[in-house]
Amino acid sequence: MKKEKIILSISIGCVAFILTMVMFTQFKTIEQTDIVAIETMRETELRTELAEWKAKYEEVQTKLEDTNHKIEEYQTQMTSEKDAAELLKQEVNDAHKFLGYTDVQGEGIVITLEDNSFKNIESFDLISLVNELKLAGAEAISINDERVVSSTDIALINNRIILVNGNRISGPYVVKAIGDMKYLESAITIKGGYLDEIKANEKTIHYVVEENIRINQYQREMKLDYINRM
Image 1 (cartoon, rainbow, N blue to C red):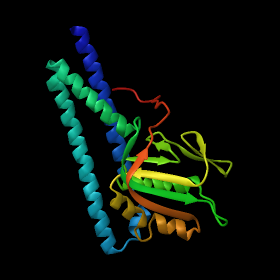
Image 2 (spheres, rainbow, N blue to C red):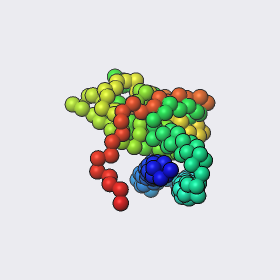
Image 3 (cartoon, rainbow, N blue to C red):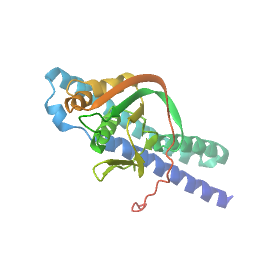
Image 4 (tube, rainbow, N blue to C red):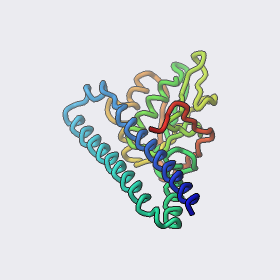
């Protein structure tokens, strides 16, 4: 009985850590606001953007409160090993979805970037797009079926080879994002936003919103080499 309680306590600690990592990703996303873009907005656009960011902040705050509530729930249900085990199983499944370890599907947007005779798509174009989609509340993102997670690297090698998660990809670059499709669309089509910027640089882009997008799971092992428990 004592051994089972120890195992249960360790499991709860692991889930709490995973939930904390999810919250960290959410806060990191909010910190990536494009200040230059905000400074160039009209007053009405700025008011709208401010209202949207207020909503995003409240959403993250709610998730933080939910996380704290769930941790308290674990502690309360420690007396019932069966109930605690079921709760842990559900939370682990949810955490895996957030961290990218399961296939997911839902509504969202599919954006395609292509090289043309004038300009080529660069890694920076993909990084900027991913950041825009994260800020718009995307819950899952992939580039050419490479799942984008908190540890994903998007790099340009020899000024011509783009790597995502260490794997080489080539155009056309298909970026899928699951989330509120209307909000995701408005985020990239706002006047002076990502879509206008890409077109102004003579690069090719087009998109579609879809009600059922499938994004595959992250295929690599996520390692944390420098984080220690306090």
